[in-house]
Image 1: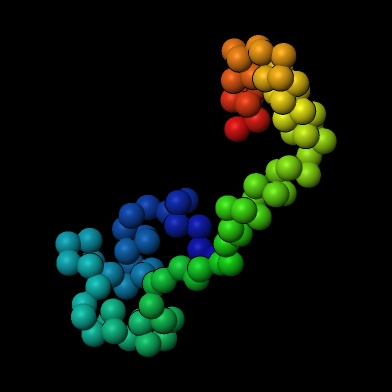
Image 2 (image 1 turned 45 degrees about the horizontal axis):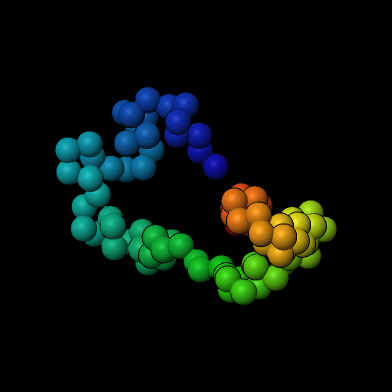
Length: 89
């Protein structure tokens, strides 16, 4: 793969067969689309928010913090409960 960041602008333009003023011609652009395909990113399978949440709950530290927040809520320490839950989130 060419290291364009190490080359001068003129070298890159020449290597790519382009023009700094006009870019690629329509014919050249069409040829490259046919050869290389459209410049599109492929979408990867994304995990749902629920799966991410459940995977986070597998952490022992998160379980301990949630238990601590339940205990502090039970004894009436609202501020501590909020702080602990903020840490979890």
